[in-house]
Length: 390
Image (cartoon, rainbow, N blue to C red; front, side, top):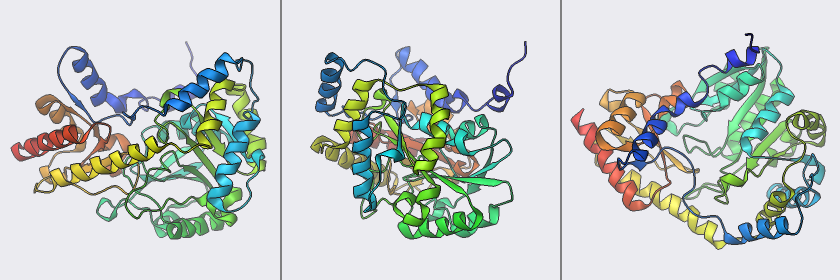
């Protein structure tokens, strides 16, 4: 039987990247105690008030077809949010509601990428990016960034990589997996390059609310001159600890949204209205428990960095944002892949190999900050113990 070309383009870009996690889960199901630091799924419960709102709206009859762009209350809440963030008026015609950031990324890529177009991105990069680009027929162009300088992409390196086929810069700030957060000054320089070469900027900002220390989140959408070429994708999966709701969106120019809607409507036509009501409520309400969640992530990252600090063979730097830490195991002489498998086998700690996020992640582990300080500290001791044996 014949299959579409897209299936070939996606071969090897699926669950294979999560092989260590899947094996750890299999062992846990068979009764073997494991410490899971592999998947970025918040361990904090979502605010109960959001669940109550979803239930209330569902029982009130919000079960019919919803608008293809998103319900009016969601788009108003998003307009208010981005108007506050940017300091200028953002209209409710600049948003599309979609079920999660992954769907939003796919829709955005399908709207601006033709077959053979190049999509540039910092390497390491989130594990699904290659697949999203390939599905649209694009060509992923990873740009390696220096782990010893915080994994920040430089505008000059971006410009060197641009060819006549370059079409999009895929930006992720705060970054999964590296924890890097672009400064406004960096974004302005990168934006100048994108203006010069007429590149779209797809900005994955799902961790925007999770920054640490003196780090301040900035978006290319904040800069008026970049608004027309910026496509923001985000959700409340991480910010509100509610990934199962699949509440996400695109923020972009009215022209982009008009062009994107026919694409999204071939995938799905509207979503669950009661979940959109819950999203509108979540975006317009402050929840103290989410402040606590953010502090917990920061405390866990500090604990991990401290616990690794005495080792001569493994190390980690404090992330600027997000919910992950990159652990450097290069001095052990092993790849991140090899170290992760031995860590699973010998120390019963489940992580993600850095190579799952591109060649730029080689020699690293991605550690998720999704367990308490005691478990983070214990896992760190086991990482050091393994490194000392190698």
